[in-house]
Structures are given as structure tokens and as C-alpha cells.
View (cartoon, rainbow, N blue to C red):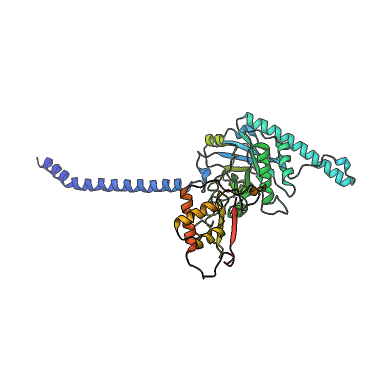
Length: 417
């Protein structure tokens, strides 16, 4: 009895204590869960389109390279995130096909070597393209823009790459340095020629500084600033530097190259490649990117923040009289004179009808000037009353008694056709 009572008493005494312990444990678990959730949420928010998006395994990866890169496409396609490969196509102006016409032997030999390299690189390009597309990758090609005729360079690229409708086209502007690379104005002409020849625009590949320059001058470069942006910047967070303008997002972000990929550490090292391969990420899934390929549409144009609007645009000091070239055009000098002489509204209306009476046929085509058209044959009463009201306003004594239209201050008269 006593023992049982003692255990019962102990149980009664321990019940509140156990309850407190359980409550404390629940609080600790809840706090730990909250902290863990904050960590995951922080990581999720950090992994955005501008901050390490390659950490998100749902984001598509695109590789790009050139003829000097060595890689194994059969190994590359084992990575399900890799959606496409962009290969270098042409470079600058086309090679000279007539080396024998060069008199200098050294220049003639140099011409032969350039042509030989050109032929070999083009054959390699065609072989890699066929293999990549057979393995299920999307394909693209870029032209390295150099100083020289941009139309010839665009035609050279098309002759070299022979792009099909499902292949991405890109113009590579390495830097805003017209002495070494294609100028931005020439790049616009290049893009227009590509559009003319293929029916779509190229993607613009460039660095952060050049992209910012174009974005800040998007009215000066209306086409270049709206090409889909292939953005090259080797940092984990580009939000503070992204150029914006018409580009609210990138089409591709080149985040890895040989410059930031070492044997020990690399942001993303695809199978079947060396560390000299370039790696890009898209703010899309593999399926979305393949559906959007070849990215040949312009992005939406956004007006600059400092663009003048009708409410705040500056006006010249002088008044501007806008004359729309619509019939009937009124001789306001005669209307003013009529306002001085007419006494009643009926007289004004009668005078207006007389002003607008059909002119005799002189055989002169009066429509050849910007300020004279053949008057209407008739006029309804409302139009006549409106003109009478204008005439009455002209009659108001706002000027000195000797004021006439001939002595009035000079005005600009613009005839808008």
C-alpha cells in the first residue's frame, strides 16, 4: 500500500516536470525546424537567375567551343541537363580563295595556310554538328565579329555554317573595341543582314561592360539592344552588374571558362570535356530551352526612364501653329478680316460660306502644295458655326487697334501631311 502510494505520489509529482520537459523538447524541435527552413529558404532565394542558377538542377546547361577544343560528345550527352552545343563558325571576313594571284611569295604561302585551316575547320564543324544533332542536342553557331564589311561577314557566316531553321545563330562581340572587333554599329548591320537572309535575328554574345554600354544607349542601338543576350561573366552573382535596359533577363549566361575553372575547382565540369570548354546556363528547363530554340526573336523594347513624355517634353519659346492638311483648309487672314466687318452671327456664317465657295477651275493642280487643297463644295451648318466662333474670337480686341495679321509677330507654320 505504502509502496503503491509512494509510486503514485511520485507519478503525481513528476507529471508536471515531464510535461515541462516535453514542452521544452517540442520548442527545441520547432526552433530547429524553423532554422532549417530558413537555411533552405535562404538557399532557394539565393539560387535565382542571377545568383548561381547552375546550382538548380532543373536549369538547362549549354556548352560552347571552337575547333581547338577537344571533347567527347557521346560522354557529354550522358548529362541530362546539357541541352545544346554552340560551336564557333566563321571568323571575320572570308579567306582569300585566289592565293596564286598574290605576287609576294610569303603572303601567298600565308594565304594557302589560312585557306587550309579554313577548309579543315569547316569540315570539323560539319562533322561535329551532324554528330551532336544525331545524339539529340540542339545546335548553334557563332561568328566572331572583326573589323570589316559587316554584310560580307554575315554572308560569310551563312556560307560557312549553312544554318538550318532549328539552329541558333550568334554574333560574338568580344569587346567594344572597333580596332580589334566588329563595331557596335556594324554589329547592327550584321544582325539585319542575318535577318534578311535567314528570317530571324542572331543572339548577341558579349561581356558585361559592352552589354551595359549597349543597354544605356538602347535608342542609339535599337536592334542590337533587343537581340537575345548571351551574357559572359564569370561570377557567382551578377545581379549588381546585369545591364538591364531592354534585357530584363539573359538568354544564356556563360559562367565557366578556362579563366575560372582549374584542376582543383570548377563551377561546373561536364563529363567528356576538358576545363577549357565554356559552360552556360539558361533560366529555363531543358524542355523549355529546346522549345524556345533557336532564340531568334527580339526582346520587348522598354523606353528609357528619362525619355520625354508629352506632359514634360520641352517646347520652343515661339508658338507653333499646326495646320493639318485636311479639307477644308481656311484662309485665316480672310476670316480675320471678315470678323472685323461682320456685325451679326448670321453675317459671319454667310461670309464663311462665301469663303468656302468652290473656286473657279483655273487648270492648276492646287494639291501639289502643302498648304492648298481644293475646297469642299458644301459645308454643313455645324462646321460653319464653328468657324464663325473662331472668327468671333479673332474679333476680340486682344491687340492694338492697328494690329493686322501682316504686322503680327512671326510664327512657325508647320503643315502636317
